Image 1 (cartoon, rainbow, N blue to C red):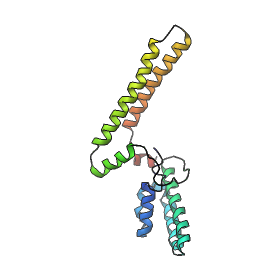
Image 2: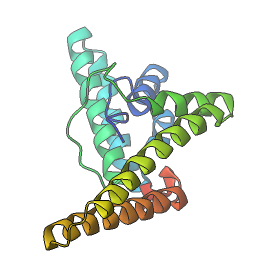
Image 3: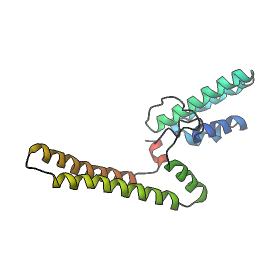
Image 4: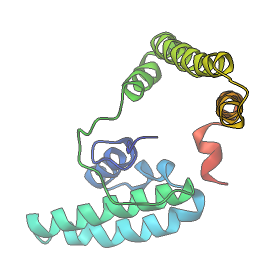
Length: 175
């Protein structure tokens, strides 16, 4: 996934901002795994008094809280935290479509996009396999190139299938 959850405009930081504004840590807790809840609660309780010390202290405290929440969120995904990304970075074409699907309850647009992308990727990879099969000239090098493309295509298909049948994002958080 692109740095969507690491972004200052991503859903984790957005929830953290809402939690601070509402003075209610429960707003952000759904974005962290259960094992990280206590750390986020402690951070929240430390940040609230700091916010009252003035705008500069509030900005610093808020930034630290966002980093803490995103770091704990990423730990729940068994992924590294590499810092917060600026708001507005390119998230690629599919995330906005996925977000729209969540809002509308319809996966039609994201399905159409992914279907076209998948068709193009499969055709390109299979085209390489077919081309290399035709160009085999009896040498080990040409056979090796064909086998690499063939196995690459098959493994690519396998990984796609595994991604399609994998559990939801939340199921991976507790793992």
